[in-house]
Image 1 (cartoon, helix red, strand yellow):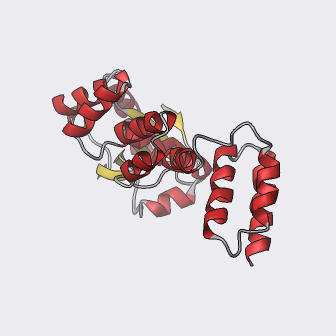
Image 2 (image 1 turned 30 degrees about the horizontal axis):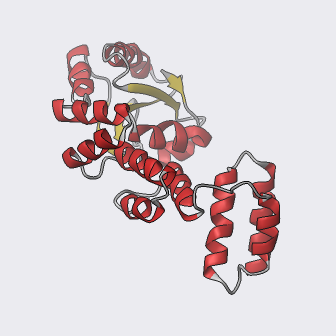
Length: 234
């Protein structure tokens, strides 16, 4: 169980729900029923042994998340799967009802088989997983990553088109388009060379954006070059 803020929500809940179902408990310190429901939720989620995760959001401190769920009253509980709301309820519930709610989120036998194949991580297992679930994000990204490593970038990009864009999808797509990464050369030299061509050359612009994607948001150069790109384009 973790406390989540507005700033963390996209990563800790939306992105995470593509990997494991996430139960969101919207509460406030002044809410009596919330205090009753909280331990019941924690117990029910803990009983899944990690197959379901729980986060708590204080609606007083995090109005953006409350607004996103269009909260009319608390406690309000929502289950997120694959970046979308899969189930939910409003108001305090008893142990049996909460346990049933959480159990509905557990993977089916087919889903468990797919997850086992994805965890294996080899090409044959990932392709088998996609035979069972053609749009499974983990299998698609995992296989695309392998294809890029074997110089099959075009095949990887075609595969990635099956699923919605996420940070990981953008990363692997950038690897595919750049031939596996920034290479051994000076990435800043490449960016400087591309910068003069980005306005009139879509390919140069895409390569520039891909290199920034591979550098990642934690690299201080990324924000500098993003600003320079914006200036160059507009």
